[in-house]
Length: 393
Image (tube, rainbow, N blue to C red):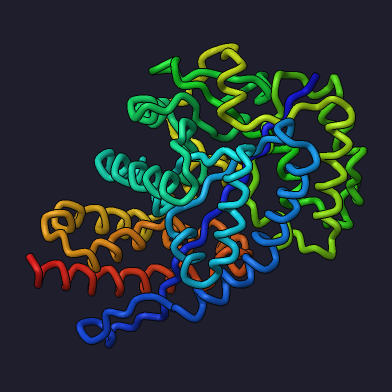
């Protein structure tokens, strides 16, 4: 019998407003509140609320046989509280079923696992406290920002007490191996690793509505056949997806909601088990240690971290930001601490990437006109933030 592990990641960045040089020293209002409100409302109405209702109906129909996992960044929760409280309530209802595991991540969806071990621990602790407060769970599974993982990061996660971690089934790491087994961290083998099946996930995230795809339209029967086939060996198929796949990236008009319901119902009827990450890690033993000396992620063909650390602009911005950490904590001002945290959101640095800009696809990933505009805007905000810190120091 095949097992499917469904996990959905939820994150909403706080968007910076267009912050000019002449705003510095005059205006400390860094956020574009109207854009934040509009984006959260759009995602809540098109994805969170309808998909959560769909999941609740599936849980009512199948009971404890249907288990899934979520992770939610702290800022996604903050934005829902402010602009879409009904969406947050629907996540609480899911938590109350006992069929949904809430996986920990970094509160700010930050890159702290690469830049600062102290801040990484602080970010994880804040996220865990939020999950316990909002959803009544103490996480045992961890999912890092953008699924960034290495042997060293995994060892740090194990030291924090987690028993399992989710990451990408990167081909350059796996080689001939399949992602459809449980593996173990190379430094601390007690940490079990669940690896994303990128091909089956990307069939939904990217290809589902592509009429040029040779498998379009994708039916539930066809998808189930791929999962059940002997050509897909292994103990567990890890479908780790951006939650916005459903209803937002793949709109309701594509049939994604009907597809998902049909797939779950037919898979259940065929004897496929749906387990959350913690249950998979509890039940299955690692088949081997996975060696990941350099960080991987679930982003780009390269599955590395160059989307955030790939050029001088990004490295300058990240270096200057994290150089302020000691000063921020020494001052202890709550408002400045809030700014410090939202300036860590990984999206800011993603917008500075020149990878897509040189390929002519920047419009698909960057709300600014170019990565250079993203860098200038961010550095104006950061410089004014540092000015405030210096005044308080």
